[in-house]
Amino acid sequence: MKRSILLSALFLLLAAAPLTTAQPRRPSADLPKWEGVADTPQMGWSSWNCFMTDINETQIKAIADAMVELGLVDAGYIYLNLDDGWHGERDERGFIREDRTKFPSGIKALADYLHARGLKLGIYSDAGNFTCACYSGSLGHEYQDAYTYAQWGVDYLKYDWCFTNNVNPQGAYTLMRNALRKAGRPIFFSICEWGSNKPWEWAQDVGHSWRTTGDIGPAFAPVPVSYDENGKRRWKPMSVLEIIDRNEPLRAYAGPGHWNDPDMLEVGNSSTVDGIFYDMTESEDRAHFTMWCMMAAPLILGNDLRSISEETLAIIKNKEMIAVDQDPLGIQGLRLKKKGDLQYWFKPLVNGDWAFCVMNTGEEAATVTLDWSALEVDDKLSGRKTRFDTVNYEVCDLWNPAAKPFRTLAKGTGKQRGRLVTAKRDVTIPSHDVIAYRLSPVAAR
Ligand code: GLA
Image (cartoon, rainbow, N blue to C red):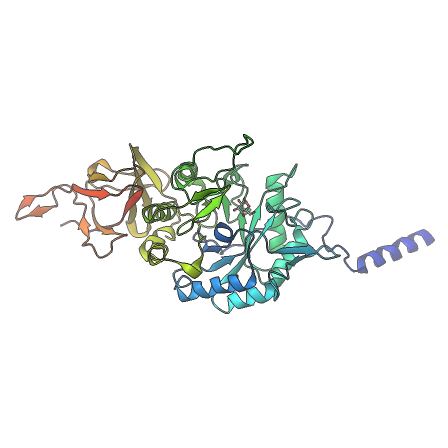
């Protein structure tokens, strides 16, 4: 009797005891991921590609101001994501704190600043003991961290995969999904394990997007392997063309709520890694941006918006191209064929429309004869067919909206002075560039 009273007292004491570590020993049951935050691929800006860990409050606020002033927020770029390097130490109870030297007013104040300007705040952590840049990871602190982010007013979490020895990927990402849901604030969950564990096969109900490749760099074509003075192979970024090849076969896995993420944009960016300088031309930037839109990829800018060129701004603000990326059907585009240096791509859009693009990966300009009858698409995934033989499409040039639209001309419909005219036309595509059109069905005449 005495013993059971003692035990009950002990139980009551434990139940009432303040949470010392705040992290429950036994995580709660599975909870669904947040819905409604990823109906179309996420758009925003992230600090990693241009600043790496060299970030601070003044600079990030200036980026936020630029996003508003340049019209990028109106164009849909609403997330401002702090990548690696915002972290300070954990406090004595294990709660993560921001680096107060870099962010003297704190992350909550930054979230308020962004929210007042129509922006949302993204943050970064890692499923292992440390982040990739060796700051504190979330392993063993998942519920605490999710709670802290929610308290700060964070809207987006990119969750990386460094220092995760022996951690089960599906388990780790599911644990953080549960924690984010439990924390009570809708937070976009961006899975970043570089495609190492085929997240497209298991993460549809876990996150809102998953990286499909290693890290991108501002390089259009594959970077040659190189070695340092000790004969050690240097790390090299993945190029735009390599990433496209990896991401393209995964189109069946993408859709509203869960997107393939071929990494952030390098449009308007350059960088020096291990003494090697990487940069892309305006043509390459345009091709890169176009392909990301064709693949319904997240559009996360990675350039310094405080000093952006007119050319770069024109690329990332192209409304028609963004509409291709953000199309409500959410179908990732397909590569119909590769012929020499030319790649032909289609993406089914709403109202029977299609986006169409030809990319020239060669070193010389190429003149292409567009013969629609040789470009018929029968897309098993979407069940859509182009039917150029019976449907007339009006064609608008997405990179040259001032150009007069033309028609694809179904059989027997293109007449001039009573005579049939051919639908074929020649277009020239500069080296490492694209042509991109929107095709909309019109009644045949
Ligand atoms: C990994 C990610 C990058 C970036 C860095 C930060 O490499 O893939 O996108 O977040 O970590 O350290």
